[in-house]
Amino acid sequence: DIQMTQSPSSLSASVGDRVTITCRASQSISIYLNWYQQKPGTAPKLLIYATSTLQSGVPSRFSGSGSGTDFTLTISSLQPEDFATYYCQQSYSPPYTFIFGQGTKLEIK
Amino acid sequence: EVQLVESGGGVVQPGGSLKLSCSASGFTFSGFAIHWVRQASGKGLEWVGRIRSAPNGYATEYAASAKGRFTISRDDSENTAYLQMNRLKIEDTAVYYCSRAITGSTIWLDPWGQGTLVTVSS
Image (cartoon, rainbow over all chains, first blue to last red; front, side, top):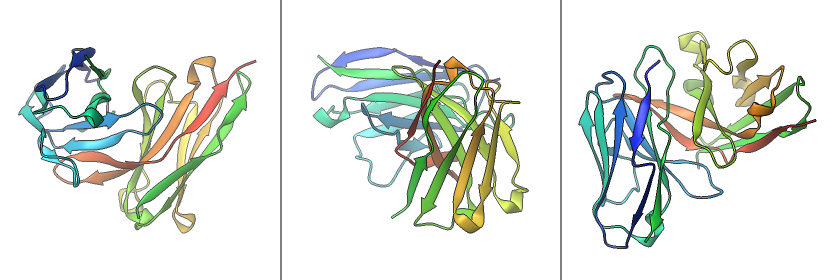
């Protein structure tokens, strides 16, 4: 199975900071990479699909890039509501296993 | 509004069974695959499996941890998907989410239900 490794696992930052989270696949997944945001006690929410396409309603300070095995999620200027856990997910098929990264918890410094 | 609502969670003994439901509204349920994802307390997201739509033969795929014990099904006339869980283990304790799969240039999950808690304990 394709494995997804996110880094860092946790990150402390301040409002206004630029933050980058990395996701690496164990083999090439083309652009089959999505990002989700999860706040405590709530369901995950889709942020970005197909590596770089923002889901409707997601602020433009979020962006995604990459291809093959290396991907990044960037938040250009952190806002208070952005403190959450972020997950990458591959949807490369086959083998249709939709593996998630282990998550990156973004905390207030 | 597109919405998914899970139900059926609860407390079950190890070795027992439980059937979760995922009720959909606000979209043409029959045209979409439905995925199940779980999350143990304080842990990350774990994909459980999916069921595709009728044109794709209602094909199912499962994570290794679910294969042989869990079965995903759907009733398009009721706009509902199901996750039948048998031979439950303590490590199956988690919040279980269902989500709609959108197929475009890739496949992504949106929206997600609010989740239902399954506790496997003696």
